[in-house]
Amino acid sequence: MAKIHEIPAESRKDDGRGASRRLRHSGKVPAIVYGGSEAPASIQLVHNDAWLASQNEWFYSAILDLKLDGTAQKVLLRDMQRHPFKQQLLHLDFQRVDENKAIRIRVPLHFLNQEKSPAGKKAGVLISHALTDIEVSCLPKNLPEYVEVDLGELDIDDIVHLSDIKLPEGVEIPELRLGREHDTAVVTAQELREEVEAAPVVDPAAVAAAGATPVAGAPATPAAAPAAAAKKDEKK
Image (tube, rainbow, N blue to C red):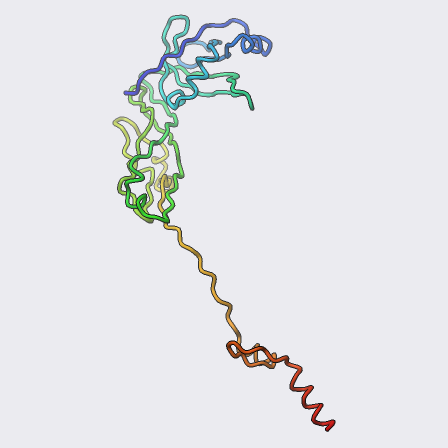
């Protein structure tokens, strides 16, 4: 079971753009929590605490213990708005979690032993990570913060698909239910081959038509030279 991370929060009564601006100026960030049997609630968090939490991978994929006015609510982060260039969070959306209902969420992939693999030890091999996270479905108690992908046996021309990933107990990838065509490639290993430029092909017929015989290392004779020599002999 994934670790539960606590996020302190307080209720707020004022809504609207003006109220949100005032909150941000006071070092808070507006947010909302919704879902479950309770009505949506407007809340606020200390911006610096929320910002520090947002620098961690778990903030986006783990179940969070939202401490709202002293009462804990299990939630998932569903949306986050950032300032376009400042290090500032503008708004957060949290969804309440029902312990008895499966949830769908994207979790990051952690790639292990790539450097130790046959492909990783060889020069001139490109190992590409086509995906860095995947969507999983499971009960909240089974939600992993990340999924490990062991690349220890990866060799040249190998492809690791979604179906090759070993998932924790009780966790599945919904995309695989849709058929084999959705078994997406996650990692590929390809050897980089240098392209050798082919030498130009000489057409003997074209050379003969130009009035010259291709001789290696010999200067080409202009096609008009034989005709000019013939005219000179006639004058003599």
